[in-house]
Length: 239
Image (cartoon, rainbow, N blue to C red; front, side, top):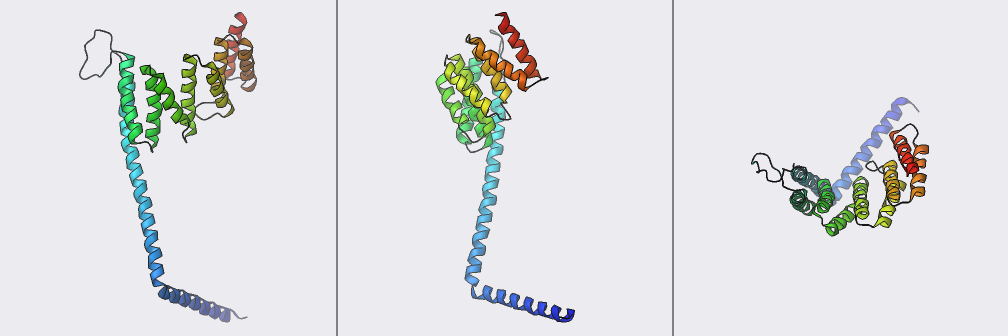
C-alpha cells in the first residue's frame, strides 16, 4: 500500500473516532457534566482536606514546641526568687505537671497529627515525672499501639523502664525481647539487647546477661557495642 493511501486512511479513521467521541459526548452530555462535576468536587475536597490537615499540624507543632520548652525549663535552687524573664520551676515534679497539662491538651486537640502523637508520648513521660505511674502506663501503651513504628518503639522503651522501676521485670523483659526481634530506627536491636542484659545483671542472672553480651560481641565486632559488652563481661567476672 502506497504511503499517501495509508496516510489518507489514518486521517479518515481519526475523523471517525473524533466524530464518534463528539457524538457520544452530545448524547450523554448530562452524564459528562455530572461526572466532571463529581471529579471537581472530589479534587476540591482532597485539596481542602490536605490544607486543613497541614494547617492543623502546623498549629500542633507550634504548641508542641512550647510544651517541650516547658519540659526542659531549668530548675532554680530552693529559696531562689523567680525571675520574670527567665522561666523556671522549683522542682522536677512541678515542671512535669505543667508540661503534662500542655502535652495532654495537644494530644487531645490534635490527635490525628504527627505532633499530636508525639505530644501523647511526652504526656506519658511527664506523667512518670509527676509520679503518676497509672496514667503514664496507660498513655505510653496508647502510643506503643499507634501506627508509627519509630514512636511506638520509644514508647515501649519507656514502658519497659517503668516496669523495671515498679518491679515488673517479666513485662520489661518481654518488651526488650520484642524490640530486639523487631528493631526500628529509634531503638536498634543492639540498644534493646544492652538494656535486656543490664536488667538480667541487675537481677542477679549473670548467665543470661553473659549470653547476651557475648552475642553482642560476636554480631558487632569492632563497634562501640562490642566494647561495651566486653567491659560489662569483665564486670560480671569480677562479681
